[in-house]
Image (cartoon, rainbow over all chains, first blue to last red; front, side):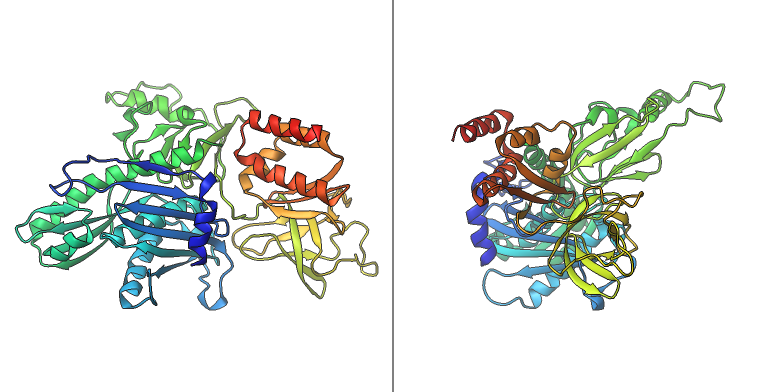
Amino acid sequence: MEMVMESAKLSDDKVCTETGIVESSSRGSGCSLRHFACEQNLLSRPDGSATFLQGDTSVLAGVYGPAEVKVSKEIFNKATLEVILRPKIGLPGVAEKSRERLIRNTCEAVVLGALHPRTSITVVLQVISDAGSLLACCLNVACMALVDAGIPMRALFCGVTCALDSDGTLVLDPTAKQEKEARAVLTFALDSVDRKLLMSTTKGLYSDAELQQCLAAAQTASQHVFRFYRESLQRRYSKS
Amino acid sequence: MAETLPVASESPAGCKARAARNVLGQVVLPGEELLLPEQEETDGVGVAGERPLRLNAGMRSRLRVVCGPGLRRCGDRLLVTKCGRLRHKESGSGSSGGIYWVDSQQKRYVPVKGDHVIGIVTAKSGDIFKVDVGGSEPASLSYLAFEGATKRNRPNVQVGDLIYGQFVVANKDMEPEMVCIDSCGRANGMGVIGQDGLLFKVTLGLIRKLLAPDCEIIQEVGKLYPLEIVFGMNGRIWVKAKTIQQTLILANILEACEHMTTEQRKQIFARLAES
């Protein structure tokens, strides 16, 4: 809760970027994402911080690192990456642990940990509101916070969620209601260099062709996300 | 052949390699690849399939490029690993090489050999002090690394003291080591910082800005009040003026300088000079 209070206190003089990247009307008809917003460097204590909004879903992230590491967790040839996901209310459960693992594996694929051996990089994610596509939003905010902290990375990454209806229509970046009604929900993490798949997690029934279709749609959508990243970072650095 | 159009073709995520020369001063993102001036020419012509035949094909003009912070070598290109503005400094010989680096606004300090930093003594153990410099592990400082120190004549350093020193060992695999003397054995301004004064932290980008040669901010601050000031490359500033009030004013000004335009700064300095 301390983090949230701090964000409210400090947000007045920081950069806030908001762009309605994609369309406004055809939401739900196929290839469309909800509105994004991102704010970086809003907390004073962590080395890097960010919030990311996708529609009504919003997550706050703080990154600490390269920092001191406990001897028990020390890895002699690379940095120890840790991801902590805190739910909006209550204690983290099995679902959070599973998501933490997925996010950590994605981050490990792009972070150049070998440049800071015997250190720890900790990413703390605080869910502020969950209105669908939570994992994708967590991935996006983790990426922005890592960039803000200046952690060396091989590429940027983003998360895209797809939902398949009972009649087979594809919805990108679904809301909580759409996720509930969907036959299958697929989340992908893609990197910015050659848009390769870094991580995928799925729930529900889908065919092979549908998976390919979802992946192709996610790759197209990732371009919008990466363009948004660029705009948002350019705005942050426009002051200096 | 992604590298055929190095000039303007900015793809959404910037995955096409751009020429390093064309993006100087612009924001670069992790994962972007940059072409060096030499490759621009050779690759640019080479697309048609016929590369112009070179008489001295064996010895292409050797150019020396240094990758600074935020850049890595990736084959014969530069890979960006941090977000920030791309900077370049010509090499002394005036060839097309030189140093490229990314100027990022990060808060966490990573020790670099030769950097002057402000540290806080956290422990005394035998013949070394442990000094917190804001990096991932404390730096070590030998009690013999002070001006005039000998085995019998130990320097007066207590836990909690501020130390201004320089790194002699700083790499990713070893514990960083500091000294408070230069190569001639002179203190040269380094050593324990006096009792009063105020220590505060700013971003690493601001420190670099303030330490740049002929930085206007420092000159203007100097005209305001007589002061003593120490900048550490690890983002720490120690300042002391005649009164506590003046010290606090100076600390607030320096902190606020990061996000002010030149005009805004001039206004504030003018107002302070009046009062």
